[in-house]
Picture 1 (cartoon, rainbow, N blue to C red):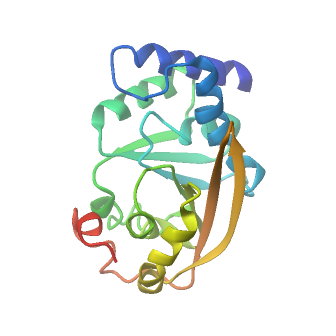
Picture 2 (picture 1 turned 90 degrees about the vertical axis):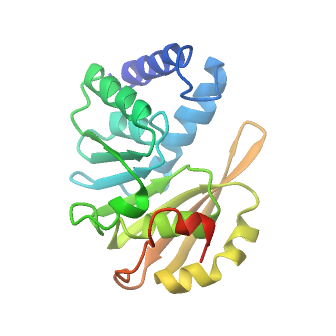
Length: 216
């Protein structure tokens, strides 16, 4: 059943992509590597358990959230994005695939992270979003529980980004737990796993637009 749903998800994404800009990936084999495999790489390194709440920030067409929701039906997946038409596609796709563990949220991360229903409520906060690490960490920290994990998908430039994130990590009370290097085709990628040392100061994240225009 999992494989059938993953295959159907691929079909739905690639078909919809013909009329809507969901993803730059149009080749089915490349999709398998860069969307399915890349999303499910988390399964090898994170300890998922029933009842967990996972936030996927900047989910785009639904990655990694939708593949993970298929493989982990006993966990709740909350997919966040600022592009409403993509969330509409995700909602319709989740209904077709009978995924009752998927919820979508539209808005700016800086605003949503201050709402009680999201503030420090998630066991894992993951993101494949393309943003500098100091910016991404400020977005993600407000969603993560004190004993949760923040997981960033990064490229080989991670070490440089990490150096540039020293002040952000100090301000946000975050520490790097570990990194995992893996390959997708010919490209090397990194999963960076962070934890919190104390509850996040209420002033973070700063108002919408500030983290990207004036990174910590």
